Amino acid sequence: MSYRRQNRAAWNRLAEQQSQFTHVATDEECHDPLGTLDARGWLPKSVHGMDVLCLAAGGGWQSVLYASAGAKVTVVDISPSMLRLDEREASRRNLEIRTIEGSMDDLSMLRDESFHIVHQPVSTCYVPNIAAVYGEIARVSRDGGLYISQHKQPTSLQITHRDAEDRYVIGTEYYREGPLPRAADTSYRETGAAEFLHRWDELVGELCRAGYVLEDLREPFRADPQAAPGHFRHRGRFTAPYVRLKARRLARNDVTEESTGIWTP
Ligand SMILES: C[S@@+](CC[C@H](N)C(=O)[O-])C[C@H]1O[C@@H](n2cnc3c(N)ncnc32)[C@H](O)[C@@H]1O
Image 1 (cartoon, rainbow, N blue to C red):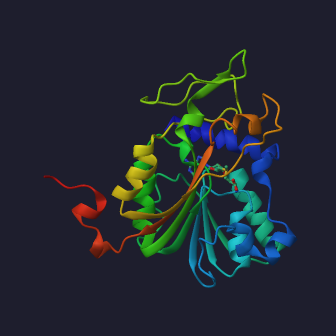
Image 2 (image 1 turned 90 degrees about the horizontal axis):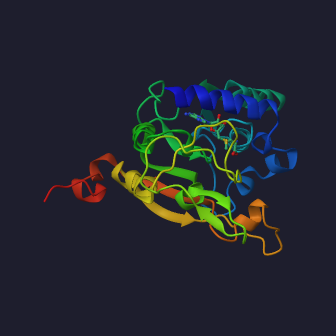
């Protein structure tokens, strides 16, 4: 499992360097935790008392906001340094948060059907097999449970560099195995991490086949018409880097061969 070792080390390093992903929830954000977490209105009006899994969400942002809103929060993350931020911020605010060091593609430490909400920020790119992640999420979610997630889009991950005319070059094949090669254009990539491209068939198709229905899909806007070539917002004018999914766990009784698309003629 070398990708786990490599990504644990990379994220420990990013946490220690206080990268942009270690932005912890502020007092102001904690005053309106659901509004902060959920500008799109995907969450229920209240999450009070709900069991929420913040998956691969270390760093003291999602966990603190959900706990501020009264949810019972578990954070699973591979990086102990990222989890330390959740623990530090929770204790500073007198909030209770359970932290578990583990990999998103093996949640065997968590019981079946134990969460109302699973919230996963950008992170599925750090494992080779997204179906394993979805299988675990489907197992630990209750019937009707919500899955809110953000992922890197495959086209963006295929970009390797900018040419002399400031066009972005798709230098990596779509149908591929193994970690992505290093790229000269490092926008939307994390230094030192092993990252994997997941095709749309996997990002969305595997989720449906795991027993979810998609309720909404958004592409966070990262384009700036004023941005200069080389800036990540310039690249964002050409291709959307992320996709956000809102999906609902089908009731186990409703998961038929037809609803999952797994049926044999
Ligand atoms: C982009 S950060 C997300 C955290 C941040 N709170 C945010 O709002 O974006 C991605 C997280 O994924 C974690 N991660 C990477 N590989 C993982 C794996 N195999 N299992 C669980 N977490 C993993 C990293 O340690 C990191 O905390």
